[in-house]
Image 1: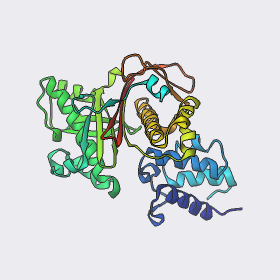
Image 2: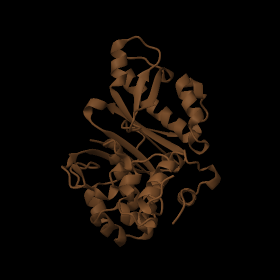
Image 3: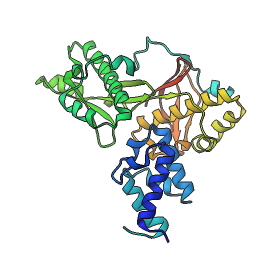
Length: 84
Length: 241
């Protein structure tokens, strides 16, 4: 079972990797679409959430969210059953 | 590219088009910010992340050029600085006037909607009367997409065409398809909330226009589309629905 903090790190690392963005600059309050260079990057991130977490609903759920924290809470709860 | 050519014919970009304004970041950076941004916009500009500041500025400048041109054509002499661009809760830009008590002019300015896009040193913007429908513009650099990404956003017909092409043509085709979908998603104010794979385009009637766009098997939407290759490097799309 992963801890909430481990999931936070995982989400931040995935965003840093997909956006080629400095990991240390990604905060829980960061707006994901602001971090993305363009909509293609954003789309690829949504796909990677779907693939990495093997959750088919991830795209349509995550696309409604704004911040890194929103996505982390969603994945923690729906993938791992973990709350903050 | 038979399907590609059946669908529409790409034009060589023409500077004469009045559909949108295309501005280079280099040109905008030569202009003092306070000559075209209001005090409120300058405060917004200060909050934009460093990597996007210049293109954000170019986008604002392009949209203001559009609206001022429209207002001037209606006999209203207006300065870019007096028009403020704000975003609604879906991120769609709209206009307000900062220094006017002319209620007719205020109503007119408020009635226009805009769409802005920027990419690698350029910005495009278009403006139209919001009562006429939705508007979406997009500029994309022609690029190589990851195979998984292409499979994810193209429908079967688009992908079948893509795999038949030579690599350089594949890049162009994929960028065009993405740009068309991105512009359409802006026009319907949904962004990526609607999955791009579900969007399809029907055959054109006049040159460079689609008769209809369909997403997720919903009713077809009549659309007017301009799609062009700029400097062999960028795809620029403007869709009105």
